[in-house]
Length: 285
Length: 280
Image 1 (cartoon, helix red, strand yellow):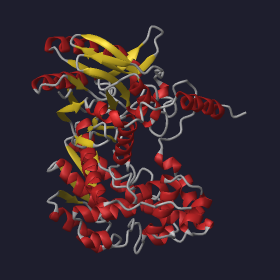
Image 2 (cartoon, chains in turn brown, red):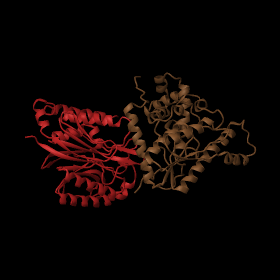
Image 3 (cartoon, one colour):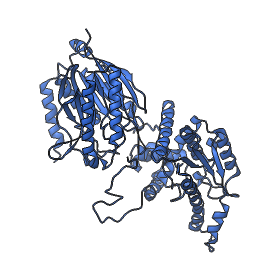
Image 4 (cartoon, helix red, strand yellow):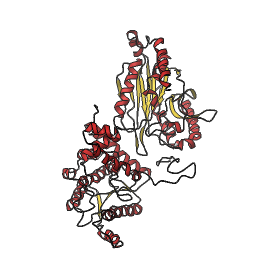
């Protein structure tokens, strides 16, 4: 099979993609008549890129919320977040989430952190607390929450339902992680942010690639074949020279996380069921 | 003397369902065209009602027909020709993705999109019936053929317009951006111009709707398949472009590819098509 895997963006595409994303942020902002755009800034590459592009789109009408969990979020992430807001001259607030997370933990006394499910349940409280803070600010300031999820995460379902993926729109949601790195370099995100190991910051020492069991380079190539080129698992395996089992491992995540990319399923009783038959644009005049 | 058609390309960003806004954009474009000396001002596909996937079409057709009347009136005042994309309705109540050719106060012709898009984000068959005719319209500036978007992704429609004697083909479009889209459009337009030895004027929508970017980049391809002019990408733009209607005639003196198309081969294509259509 001679198929070109053109996942990397060409030089001329980087500028065009940047312009399209910036325009789209401005368009959403204007469409809902927002007064401010809000980005939850972790100090990672995705939120740094979204913050920088939002700054270009919205100027001073942008607020970054830096919401670390002390003793869990790496110190360097907070430093990176501060470095970014300084470099791009972005308004920001720092809000420590420990108190809120602890409050929830105390509601669930029997937590066994050795139990995988319970550990994850507690970990998921953190992005959900950040989501509540996002919407607290958004509601109070007539803001719109600009999401930072990328296509790789959205496809793998590597995000917390009603947590970090609960936002008003996804400006970089059609870019794979490896493309995010490229675009981040292109717009001048500090190199140390672009180069560091990605982490969801859910517990100390967590890295995405370790948790996912594959590098983003591998994952993106596999997803690109499955999703963009619409190849089968077998064809993907052959093309990339990766065992079918590894492809299946990634593909299973895509299938299992469909619910995270849709509104909740509605039991259909009428001819105009709202998640199935009803088809109206969001930008409606 | 060279026969030149001064084509005003009005690359506008229509909003889906916002007829009042779109109408104002079209009227603004007409005035710009008049100021800049255009013979005819051409607007994108569905420029009056907007493009996108949404049942909004079902509610807004009457309003878009009313707006068309106002636009016709405006061309009368300005003594100007125009091509405007809108949704038309026939006597049975069926909707068509249509382009109206308006000649200074009256509709001179209509063209309904023949190849409706129904893949990926497109859902046109949910609303529209396809047209099945490929007319060519006489104007004071030359014989005009009109195609809408997907029509030019198939070779047959521009072929038919060429056989009918079109001197230029206007391609109205609302093309959603995705990776590689600009390049593939460039290929198709170039090939259609080259194949038929005919100038092509591509008029694309700009702006963003529900996260979908209409990429603009309207363009003029000469009868020799050269990209002569490209408008701005992504944003609204307006240009009056001199379209050379003599070049195809000059080229066709020696280039026999239109003249020598053989009836036998066209019939063979039809037979082959019938075979393809019968699976069992």
